[in-house]
Image 1: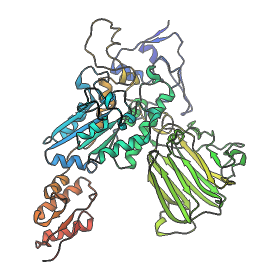
Image 2: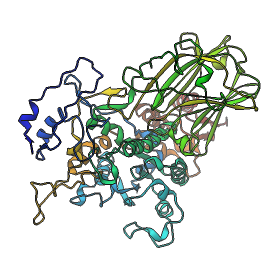
Image 3: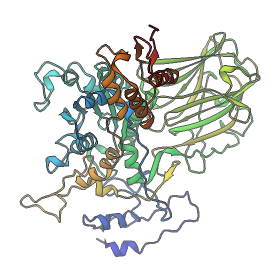
Image 4: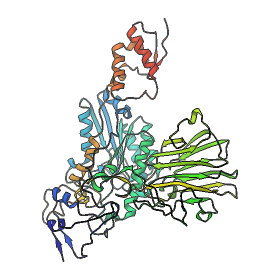
Length: 616
């Protein structure tokens, strides 16, 4: 057997004149590479170990690619938890006591191959909350349960299965009911790693709304990728890795679409381990090929490229300079010129994610059978949002482009007229009709455009003006690139069983599983930074408003003075607070103090309060 030392391995030089080519070195099949658990050694190894460790990657791992020494280090993401998203928690903090709860799988559970209780990331989360709010007494519940899914979290039939460490378990109440009974002011929901592509968006929607219904703020947690070198549960397989991406991206985009705070652990993990940001994407144009379903720009797509009685156009296997194919992408943009929609066409259906193919309708519907153009978006959870326009149905030649990138969906048309509702030109003659954030699952899929309607309906004739795509599951799929700051092995490495081949009595260690559960250093590198980058503090505005608010949620001039209003308004400005969800009403007699009167008028104009005061 050949053995390679760190020094020997560093002598290998990889040269490439094509920056997007994947270069690799094939070691002898009987070669072994020995590297002790040492942070510095592991980091150096990450510069030349292009793929994950044995046993099963066979030199193919789309998440590990050649690293350019010129790339910068990962930088922390912008805040995704902001004070104005935690109003219930902040109101509780203003009173000096708040209840926080986490519900989810094993990652925040003591069973996650931890060497001792302090390694649990829940403790770091509590530390962040306490340091931001030192005056607040936190009552906390860790209601996590290993190996569970969003389906189990939403279930009403699992009362008899709940483990004894779940506070409140009685053999009858469901897991969700028990957690709701705690009446948390702030709830963290963490799951997805066990769901994979089996995630049902309806379960996510149900659990989130259940906590919101008891006035609990909800923070969604995006899970991270398991080890790409583990054969446990087949984690090394592309399907397993993409399955986790499927679930985690739905969680993140659901949060973004509903303005919920969230913790993007998966995104940060991609940046520090795999060296790319899956949300900052470049989408180079896919190259047309003569004789294909995309023969040339501005040239009609042949009828033979359409499927299902000429009703459906599937994105073709045409690749771009990143080698990302349009028939297997996560994000995309297409521009079309169409001959005109026939009267027997009722609607077009365009899937927004792989979720649609699994029976959870996650689509854009373009409706043509009404007086004006109409759009509907289905979120995979059974919810449908409709957007009406005053745009006539395009019966003659028309052009549009649409983009699905991350949580953002854009649909723009070339209009021959302007109206106040659609006065939003973006250049090149296009006008945005739809620009929204939507929930959608991750993982590569094949987009398509499908027409439905009368018996003889077809998609009609059209040309492709542009086609672009990216793959957010690949290190070289279009995401912004970085030099990884950790290796795959260093995050998950089982520090006990791999400690110098130790097989004797127990020795102190830092945990780890070699598969999904991370060791203490992995938790420190992947979870801690995201937790501590957020603003968990109770804002000035909430505290001030809470002091002057009466029990029936109506503000009275008798309870306030100019100083009180100035404090509240100052807090709103300093902490970026938007107008309250429901504007409190100011009742009673109009104030005589000129300063108070001016402040009341200003707050009313800003939309913060409603002035219902009356002259005496």
